[in-house]
Image (cartoon, rainbow, N blue to C red; front, side, top):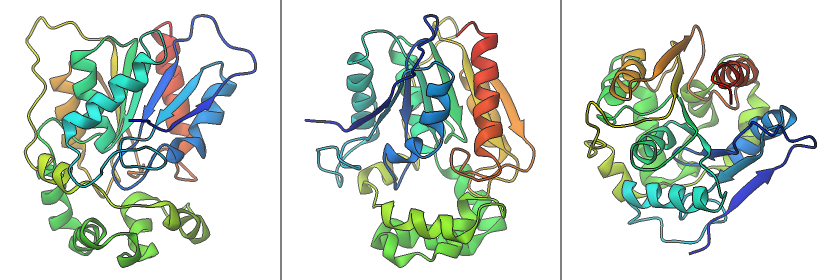
Length: 264
């Protein structure tokens, strides 16, 4: 099965930087990293690679029955192609996929942006049912009927701050796609990574915003605690950290500063 992998290579590679492997979340593909993050990180000397999970973007594979374990296998396949343990950066659902990968495979580091926690979607569903039930309803339409059933205004509210203009959302809408029904079921109560107290882990950063409409900060804290990682909360930041006009660069700079502090 052929996986789509987008790449952005630095003009002046830094010899001490491991390659980065980006893992996207639901309803999108590798393109979500190529808009802002990949050019920015490659300018900092990082070799950037973004995988489209099976059935997403230009990757082969059947989407409907793809499981969480299948997605972890896709990340492992993409990482093996790099030849050295990468820095794995995952967002939202891709953050949960990355968690499972980091527990079971070698990596230089892990960065989890607004990740689903190990316990899955429960905290997200409760958070949205309390504070934005209309968004929860429309995300259900997105899952069941596809992007054409969802309004750009809801996508804006769900994932971005007011600083992101409406025309950016219009540009984004045609690129959205459906998600695996099986994964949606898996995420309600996923198997947690098998992690003992002495299990070796790479350095891990969990980064999220306290204005995330999709996930509460308690979900990010759960992830950081479970993986014995560091937690950074960005005041005012939304869920779509890698694309939001106001927040993509502060997010990228926070990640790069953390990587440099780790010697990466």
